Length: 228
Ligand SMILES: N[C@@H](CCC(=O)N[C@@H](CS)C(=O)NCC(=O)O)C(=O)O
Image 1: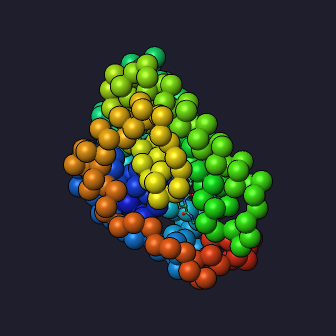
Image 2: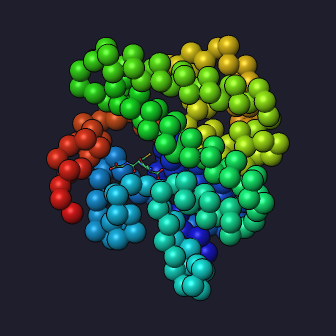
């Protein structure tokens, strides 16, 4: 059985989408990161970086429990375990890995900083807002060029790279990003967004709540920076 520890955020949603696409049994455990549950000692045992998502596979490679943190690694683990959404052939497989890493190293961190400076920062810092707005739009441009060459990010097939990237990029309107002109991205977002598993996955834990004072304290206050 797969146990998923998660919350309603893009990094959580990637795994919600993949598990719904795979249609395998899983148990969902809510970790309310807005209330500091990511710092609980039991959770830290499986999540050394105090972040969701995390999975525990009770039938792991050695036959017993196997823990995986970092959403990209979790997606590769599930794809490899089930033989779905990531090809086995090396050249094709590394096309998926490259675009998954593009999400993990580019889209995720840059969109995260964009949200920080547009939504969470206590003061408006124009330089930072402009820098991350431009960077997010540049990344949509990279995707648009790629999706002009092939239907999906890694080529002809829908893979974990699409699921991971979709979870971060579909909410461009809520984020206040104008992506008009990126017709290939808009086509891809429309197609992926119409998949029933994607709809179930993105609605599994609802939409992220507006941050209150306690949330901000948990995300950016002293508790975050305690030595563990
Ligand atoms: N690189 C990590 C990032 C995970 C991450 O940033 N998780 C956020 C929610 S999207 C979190 O748990 N934040 C709580 C905290 O930092 O205390 C991954 O992809 O799994």
